[in-house]
Image 1 (cartoon, one colour):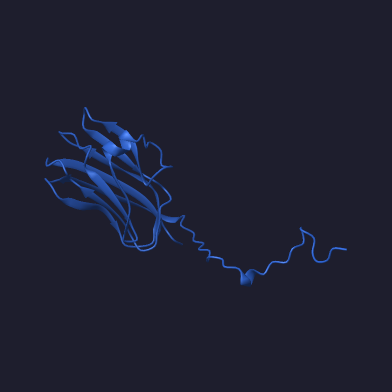
Image 2 (cartoon, one colour):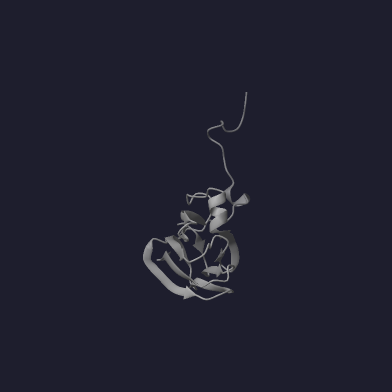
Length: 155
């Protein structure tokens, strides 16, 4: 005769298992919209958005307008001081990244005739100490950039 518990009545030793701690946070309170718009000079790099608090991205976009192609200018997303992703409008277009399911940045509009590029910012990126978007200008011609980020603070 078999002894012990049946398969559906198993004893579990929770304290003996190696379980990573579960972090449960509510980020749906206090949404904040950050907006920056400026004419960017020639060469170099600058931060479009710089957040020094914990939170989660709820969405946003970067709009670039110029008189020449801006397809190779790059955007670097920093989350908690670490590089999360680096993309250019050209690479997003080349790889067909048009939905926020794949990476933190995705293509909304790519118009290399009228030199208009709009890049979306994925919702759901959680950061504990900060969030930054760095723009690297590689073309050498002044442009206009508009950046909007909506993020939520923890309750």
